[in-house]
Structures are given as C-alpha cells and as structure tokens.
Image (tube, rainbow, N blue to C red; front, side, top):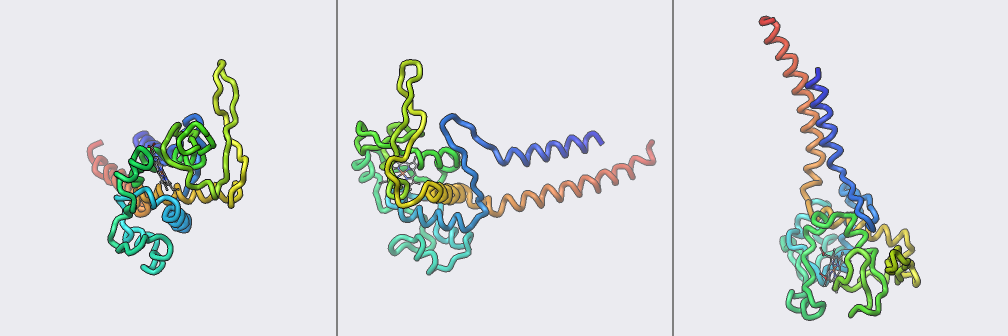
Length: 242
Ligand code: HEC
C-alpha cells in the first residue's frame, strides 16, 4: 500500500509541476489558456497587424495554424496571411535582418520560441512595459527590458505611459508606470489584447501541447488502472509462496 501511495503522490507532484508560476520581481503574472482557440485566433490577428512586419515565426507554418484552429484557407487569408503567402509557408517577415539592423541597430529576433525562452509572464509584462524616455533614440524605454531597441508598436491601443519614480538608497528607481494619455482601448481591453497575443505566442512555441496535454491525462489514467491490475496479479502469484 505504501508504494501505491508514494506513486500517487508522485503523479500529483508531476501534475502540479506543469503549471509553474514564475514570481520574478517586476513581472506581472498572466493567466492564459492555450486551449482557448478563440484567444489564439484573436492573438494571431493582432500579431499579423502589429508584429509580423518586423518579426518572423520561422518554426510555424500557416497550414499548421489552419489545422489547429480549424479554419478555411479564405478565413486564414482574411485574418492573418501576408500578401501572396502559401499555406505551407512558414511565417516570415518582409523585413530582412540587414534592414532590421540598419533601422534598429539589432535585427528583430524570430519569436517562435520566445514564450518558452522568456516565459509568458515576461512577454506579457514586456508588451505592457513601454514608457516615455526622451533619452532613448526612439523616445521609449521598457521597464522589463531596459534600453531595448524595439519601438512601442502598441502605443495607439494602449496609450502613453510615464514612469513613477521613488528614491531608494539615494537612487531614483522606477516603481510603476502610469497612463498619461489613453489609447484607443481601455486598460482592461488592452490587457485582453496582450493576453491574446501571449496565448498565440505560447501556442506557437509548442503547438503540439494542444494534443499532448489532453493525451497525458489518459496515459496517467491508464497507468493507474494498470497498477490495480498488477497489484492483484502480484497477490495472486505470491499467494502460494506465503
Ligand atoms: C518596427 C519593428 C518591430 C515591430 C513591429 C515589433 N518589434 Fe518586437 N522587436 C523589435 C526589435 C528591433 C527587437 C530587438 C530589440 C533588442 O534586442 O534590443 C524586438 C524585440 C522583441 C522581443 C524581445 C525578444 C527577446 O527575447 O529579447 C519581443 C518579445 C518582441 N519584440 C515582441 C514583439 C511583439 C509581440 C510585437 C507585436 C506586438 C513586436 N515585437 C513588434 C522590433 C519590432
């Protein structure tokens, strides 16, 4: 019985390890649901309008998105396929790395895996973390990624933020951001937009999780049934020897 209890505890521990929450200072945590196909689709639309001009998603093909979201080719074209892209193309950007470097000093990176390498909380906080900073070449800085070269492409939706500073050990540090000029979306609408975008990027970073995660539950259930069967078998075999 002890072994069985230990195994069940191990299963529970493995289950709960899946939903890790990062609590790094300065980051806001975001709850996303990669099974929310509507959120992925909305996020893909925002991505096509605001990000695809500079960033590629080289590991993802339109055809995969079409299959996972169960969309028609016409629906795909309308929502987020660029120009004359073909369904089996990967999501490239029209901006060449050389042009990117000339414009921003560094080529915009491919974002296929960013939701895994940085984590959803980081990407969410980053996209909401731009503030006015006249000392920077583009007039903006970012609370999560200081001195990053990316312009604040979502400012029209979010509005303009200024830093709130406090003195800490004689140094002026940013303790928060405040909205000084509203954008076209309210604060909660913008939160939703960024959450959708992060959901889309989390899906892109590992599309197979849509199939893998539900399958995992069946596998564990199957293993639990096997334990019961094998325990009974063991009892049966050892009965004679006791
Ligand atoms: C006008 C070009 C441009 C657009 C449009 C743009 N970015 Fe960027 N982005 C950049 C550049 C340049 C960098 C690299 C900055 C650096 O490393 O200093 C960057 C960096 C990033 C990073 C940081 C990657 C990392 O790991 O350091 C993320 C995340 C990101 N962009 C997401 C987005 C998203 C999401 C959108 C759409 C809402 C977007 N970007 C739109 C130019 C752009």
